[in-house]
Image 1 (tube, helix red, strand yellow):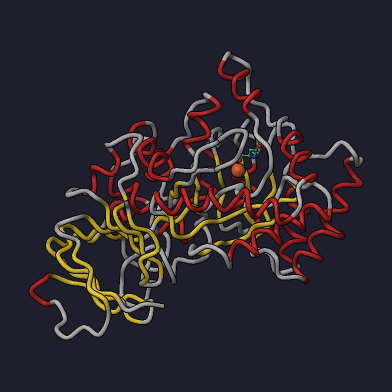
Image 2 (cartoon, helix red, strand yellow):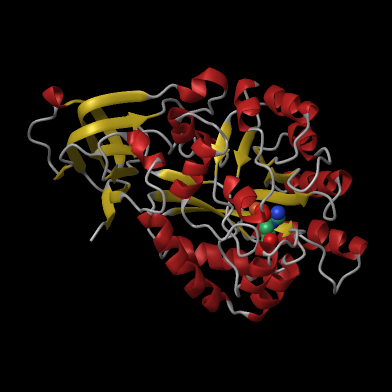
Length: 406
Ligand code: NIG
Ligand code: FE
């Protein structure tokens, strides 16, 4: 945990608060020109204009030389741990085949065959590439094991990774991702609820329980039963909701008190109203719509309905082989029609809220973690403008610089 003083920040841009922001509040940021940021013991101690910079700071001083500083980015929905590739499926889809989610079983076969150590080795470079993009907190799901030992192996790999990388990793159990062919439907539902959830909870391997509630996957009733069981074991519900069709998954997310409803490409009007009333965070994944070539989710309608909107990569080998959250944020501008201020909040404070971490990360304010990015930019809006570039200059976690551009 470091002591660090950032000086000569050209533009310090951050959302404020410890709860998710919807409606017009999503676009309200604090912008300070020519600023400093002081981090003590890994936690933000103070920030303000350079004329008030602390004298005699006891730790390291980093001169940003006019660059932009934001909070560290938070990626709240990834399928980080898997083996194998789906390049054949990807190329078939590029030629016009429709995405159905059937390829999940292909990745499950490869992932079952890999050891925990191999899964860790495969995930490490992915996390490094995320760090280069300014991502300091990463949610990671199981879901490519689809059998008790294999699901636990993935969650143990996530736990092992947590000690090996500088980022904060947040684990989610997604045993209900698909139905594996080696079990009957009822038999697998039973295995998830009666065996996997209790073991995951007992070993403290996950904070959240997620279900792929969609056409051809888990029905609303099946998802409800699994998420209720997860709740009984202390796992907070999350949902893959209405990605392939409007099945009422957003309504279920609201009903069950899910912390987030993710995807929402086909969310209904009633679903949007339900999310707004429940205060559920909508995690949008435009990289997925881009890759599977489907219509984008109704982001403007969600914001205008006061639903707090977050953005995430959905990094996975099928529908979103995308590690760069900044790329997804650029799609947030171009395809979701969000404003730069709304996009920044979506990938920091609201993303943290989707992980129950809005009190700890996602803004630069006294008491929050000293997780920041110095971007090689003079105007934060250009982060959403230079496509295909990594523009992070320094990335800090808990006041330690953990990545520097060569
Ligand atoms: O979030 N939609 C379900 N699961 C993943 C994709 C999984 C896959 O195709 O491997 C998603 O898009
Ligand atoms: Fe996903």
